[in-house]
Amino acid sequence: MILELKEIRKNFGGVTAIANTSFSIKENEIFGLIGPNGAGKTTLFNIITGNYKPSSGKVFFLGKKIDHLKPHKIVHLGIARTFQNIRLFSSMNVLENVLIGFDKSIKYNIFEAFLHLGRFSKAEKNAKKAAYEILEQLNIAHLADEKATNLSYGQQRKVEIARALATKPKLLLLDEPAAGMNSTESDDLAELIFNIRDNKNISVLLIEHDMKFVNKLCDRVMVLDYGKTIFEGKPIDAVQNPEVISAYLGDFNASC
Image (cartoon, rainbow, N blue to C red; front, top):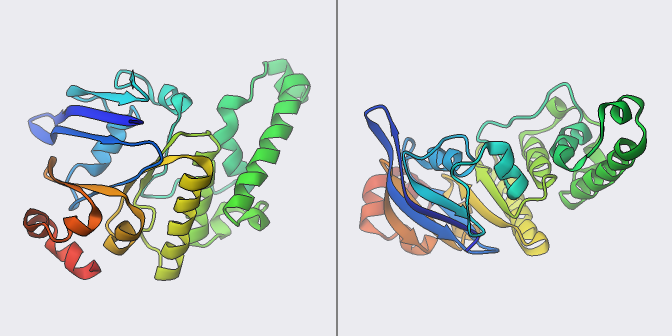
């Protein structure tokens, strides 16, 4: 297993956001985390990435316990994420936004950075080359010099994914990647995620409300409701599960 969560509980004051939730993700698996708004999905993402500490329970990544680590340490281990609300730097172009993801791999001292010498100069060139390669793989290399704010929503989402890929993750967390996309854009995104999994051997954990997207993409799903797991299995079985239908009826009926 690449990721294991064991009996995770998260309390905010007197409110239980996550109640003793356990699940695991296999290597090269695309795993969906679904459920109504407020079910605890993003809270789980924040626990996995170190932004929240669990009130109890343990998180393991490639067999290593990580729930005590700071977010940047978890990124260095190989977990990257995108956000529900796209977080790009509007003053930067596409290439510059992606280069931020290479920061951990550029080793230099202040003198080298100031004069663009030595290790910094070489690492910077290598990072730019690698960034262009990622942009080409995502079919947006032609936008490298464009300001992020000039892009369509779907293009901005690809840039955010490109920046996450620049950290060389083994596990990619996507928070509602298809939100706001039309059917053509979401189909294109699904193919992109398949390619990331198949060509880069990256496992994917995603939060998504679009069940057509989930059914097409995910090997397995887990359904949360009020912080509790009510289903885990194949997407096609989730939409036929009475408890899931009861908790998530409107979303499923609208999408199936």
